[in-house]
Image (cartoon, rainbow, N blue to C red; front, side, top):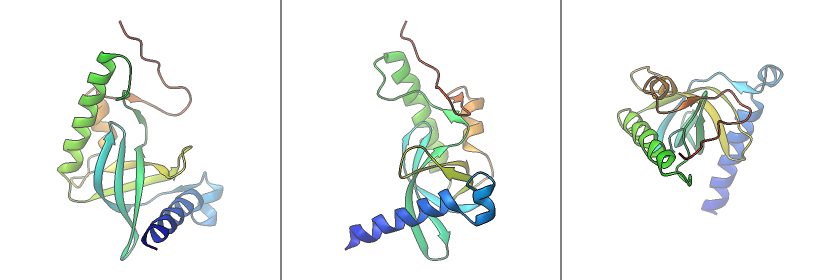
Length: 152
């Protein structure tokens, strides 16, 4: 029964984020937010599992892909890429660990079921994607084909 409620909660948030109010569906299927969240764990340099609170006393667990960035892949065959991925992962872990609450905005569905794309604002108001970009740990990403990493 508990797993059915969890699945239902995920479907509800995914539906809300993907659909939103009728006006937002027409404007690109985005929810402006903010939606308060807390980090459960960092998956990699551009994805965080969060407990989001879209309404009072309602919690939904979902994966959030950070909008506008692409981190190196942790499972790359290239040792240099894996090292870069670990640095991005560690940096994002430090950022979210320093914030008791996070804020999601500019939320939309992702091409992968069960994940959303959103801007992630830290408790101090800084944007996590911007920090990772400024530190040179991730690449900008606006959709389309990702950069292909080559091993030297």
